[in-house]
Amino acid sequence: MKRVRTMIPTPTLLTLRPAQAFPGHAAPRQRASRWKPWLCAGLLALGARAQAHEFWLRPSLFAPAVGAPLSLSLSVGEQFEGSPVAFGSTVVAGLQLFTRTATQDLQALVPPGASQSELPLRFGTQGTHLLALDSRPYTIEMAADKFTAYLREEGLEAIVAQREAQGQTQAPGRERYRRHVKTLLRVGQHSDAAFGVRTGQTLEIVPRQDPTHALGRDLAFDVLFQGQPLQGALLKAWHQGRTQLTVLRARTNAEGRVTYRLPWAGVWMLSVVHMEPASDTPAIDWDSHWGNLTFETLARPR
Image: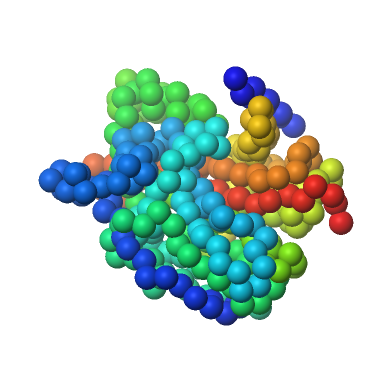
């Protein structure tokens, strides 16, 4: 059994294969027989169970050689173990590539439907490549007790208090959520200042130091909402080892910042959730935004 340890404290895009698509979770029932198993798993996770799950970008290689093929996939799940979600315009609202010198819009590469589990890519120049993806909005309604439990798990006690003050404790949670996810690649085994590029996503996690060379060093992250520091947000850092899941948890300070010292090399995922009252429709009570960042920390500091 795996133990859980909680610690609180543009380069040229060379080639692309034709991409198939993703029928979103509102697809007609009669098409279910044509869905593939991995697609069903991702579809269910994006639908009724999505609020209990993280959602992240997973490259097949975090440090590909220049010109080498790699694949980019989406995962959704718990405890940094997930099921694949297909790429498609019904899921992906925006996909961008950021480097130290350029920005490239990759949305045209996102297929219009959804029968493909990954997006194949190649990059033509070395250095840090930051990929940023925004999902389309989805809505969900949860029973009152489950909604309250989810709010507490994500550090959203202020929303719990607001629901209590408004006499909504026994009311179901009607929520609209969006995902804002990023991943860092070191093309050609090289990294540069692009790790700290601000993408302009509604909610984003921005490292202040290069996280790929951060083992055993203080590593600060800024959490920004609509470009401004987000105070009091719960930022989690996840590391999946062979026998142990490590989770670091800390609140952002007045500058929207958390500092961690990562104890292990390997792949890390950071996640944060922010929620506000919805104001544009009576059918939804809350708007939430989920930020996520994945990267690989090297075994030896530079």
